[in-house]
Amino acid sequence: MSTPDRLRCEVAVVGGGPVGAALAITLAQHGVDVVLIEKHASPQPVPKGQNLTQRTVEHFRRWGIADELTNARTMTDDQVSAGMTAYGSLSSGHAYPWMRRGGVAEYYSAKNMRLPQYRTEAVLRERTAAFAGIRALWEWEGVAVSQDDDAARVIARSRTTGEEITVVADYVVGADGSGSIVREAAGITQTRADHDRLMVLAVFRSPDFDAVMSAYPDAAFVNVMEPELEGYWQFFGRVDASETWFFHCPVDPSSTAETLDLAPILARAAGRAIDFDIQYLGFWDLRFTLADSYRAGRVFVAGDAAHSHPPYGGYGINSGFEDARNLGWKLAATLGGWGGETLLDSYDAERRPVFAATRDEFIEKAIFDDRAFFAAHSPERDAAAFAAAWQARSSDAVDEVDRFEPHYDGSPVIASSGTTSAVGAHSHAARAGHHLAPGRTDAGDEVFAALGSGFTLLHAPDADPAAFVAEAEPLGVPLAVVALDEASAARYEAGFVLVRPDQFVAWRAGASVAIHAADVLETAIGRR
Image 1 (cartoon, rainbow, N blue to C red):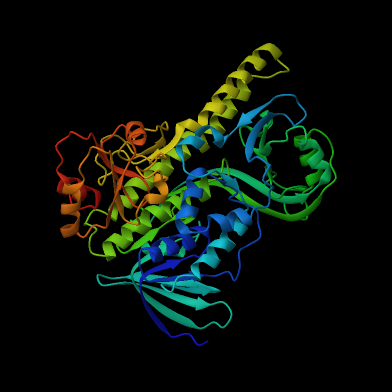
Image 2: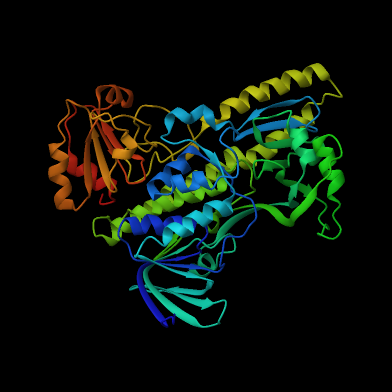
């Protein structure tokens, strides 16, 4: 099939990995015309981005791929995707549960899952083909980006033929990874923190290591701490139902695939020598980057193009998917004529502080905290004091998941005050700026399934939604109205809950409060 030398669309997405494909799907579901540009012909078979949260699986449901991803799993139904932290080695006797997502399960309408990124990406790619509004250019690479007052442009080059086309769009989104050409072309600078550590990523098969991990049957990933590593992690993760694992660890900066002897490194972390076969060996530099803005005019960045960090705790791919959902509906609202002037700017105002807090309070902070802990405590120096301190860490680790609760308090399009952050506590109560917890409609259906593709007004049985319906139409806001059952209204502690297309609460109020519906809606769509 011949390719024209010029394409016109509403949004051009550069980078068709998980975040770019997810954004394209989100836009297409809202009726937006998308060109998706991806340099790789197929997903790259390196296991990463595996720890998928309940929130991410909620996205999968909205994108219509939850069943397909369940079928794509590499673990069995009875295997639990749970974490563990160990001291010294896996045979030291010092270990505790870590990153147990089950502690917040009741606040989401889907279960978390574990799946290699390449499996997720394959399903997302297949899903893009279902939308006539997505024109995917596989094996095409964005090589230049420009913009003016009227449009943004991407020059894309075929990696097979060398031919070039110009894609003209109302907006361009760079989802093209940490080395983003879109970000560079738009002049978006980054704040970068280098930790001067070369890390190895090894994928290996080993029945012998499975035997080691049989002592921890519910652990799919484990962080093995060693004092001499100064807070940097040795990290194992299960890839499939048996025998295949990945491993991250700091190594000598002069290491290469030819010179690195992985056997003693694995033996030290496992607690004994193991037999293994390497399937993949690569290296990466440990650093944090955060774009100083997620927007420059008609150009936006998302996923690793906006923020990158070590693969500690599974935050990366989940954050990227949330970028896609947040930006997707806002672009659609703007292109549809009902989004206000401040709506697109709210993408940066909401998502960038959330990642900054994730970096500072959960990822980088863990390195510094671990370093300080092992400087202060040692079982060799004082076994009793170490045991007490280790037990205290265990309690904190189990509770920590309820401290990670990204929210948009203080956003210009949220009816709340406060500070946008990743630090918070889950609640069944509906709170402006926070993710909506599960509930039931008055017909007995799950609230999540009843939410519309635009905004949704949930209301208690005794609350009258007529004022919102009357104001939404002249504003052009797509609004579904859903009555709650009494129990859910009570749990939400609200008579009215205005839910955004990304399932975050824009506003809530009691049933008897005087409602200024136009003010509420205009704030939520960026017209105030």
